[in-house]
Every structure is written in C-alpha cells, then in structure tokens.
Image 1: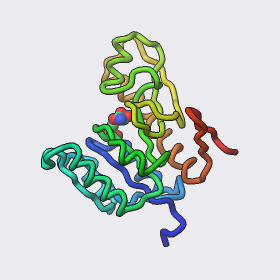
Image 2: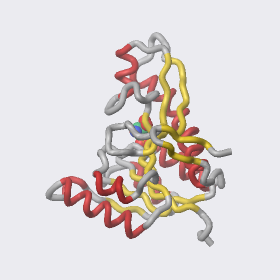
Image 3: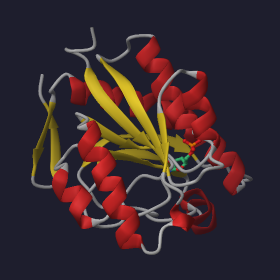
Length: 205
Ligand code: GRF
C-alpha cells in the first residue's frame, strides 16, 4: 500500500514541533509520503512521544551510551541504511551529521534552521538575530552538506523582528513559518521537483 509513497525518516533531539507538523501533513496527504521511522539521540525527547502517539516506529540511539562519536555515527548509518528512506529530515536534531552519512544520502537530507541563512548559522539563531538588531528574520530549509547550516537552500520565509522581541518571542513567530515551509519542501522533494545545481536548488515547474 505504501509502495508509491515516499519514505521519510525524521531525526529529532527535542520537543519535535517540526516533526509534528510533518506528521500532520502526512496524515492530511499534504505530500505523497509517510514517516516510516523517527530516530532520536536523546531518550527524553518529546519528539519520541509524538511519534508513538502517531503510531510511528522509533529508534533511540542514546548518544551518551556510545563510547565515541564515531561509534554513534556508525550505528546511525547502519539504521539509516537498513531503513533506506527516500528522504531524511532533520527536525531539531542537535548534532552535526558525519561525512559518511552525508555521502551515503547525497541531496537526500534536509534541515530546518530558524534564521535566513547564511545569517546566523549554528546554535541560538533567534538570540543572535535579536542581539544583532536585524529587523527581519525567518527560517530556511536546506539540503545538508558537510558544513554547519551551509547546504543549498530549498525554501526560505521571512518575518519581522519587533523592537521588543526576546529570543523566545521571535522563536515562537519563526516557528509558525518553519512548520509551513518544511512540509512544503518535503512536498516539492517527493514530487521530484527539486534540482540541485551547485549552490542553487531549482524548482522544476
Ligand atoms: C527549530 O527552531 C528548528 O529550526 C531548529 O531547532 C528547533 C527545533 O524545534 N533546528 P522543534 O523540536 O521542531 O520543536
């Protein structure tokens, strides 16, 4: 039954509101795919609970229980290869993926970041934006490469930064946009409408 549906694996470390947006989108048939597995490096991630509530299988690879990053990545790669998804979505996944994994799934791994990249990569992007004093920020969905938030950009959406915003109030505003563009990027991908040419992601009509 799921044969012609795109198979998606989501990696999440935390509360998982982006995961939830993808779960909801898949239930509504917003895109032609389903989430086959949710993987977390954090056994306490609420994302795992969201997956369970939606009946999606989960795998916990508790980072703290591995002797080294290398061993953790080896296991993660094995799980991903076994699952063989069409698309891997990072949704609040708080680790940098190793080269081996990225090479094994070229242009098949997406991430969502809460700023208009290349501004404010890395941690606490919303705090960086507030402290810098920008008047506009937003979010970016991009393919993952070996850098930190540097891969080819798929979609971006902007929103205002208000004078009295805190990192938290800005994060909340940006999140509404994240939930919209992540599912849209997944839809475009599963429709085969994204073409990567160097740094650019072109949208086929
Ligand atoms: C989001 O702001 C996402 O852009 C960033 O981490 C946060 C995760 O939030 N990468 P959630 O776990 O999806 O609620």
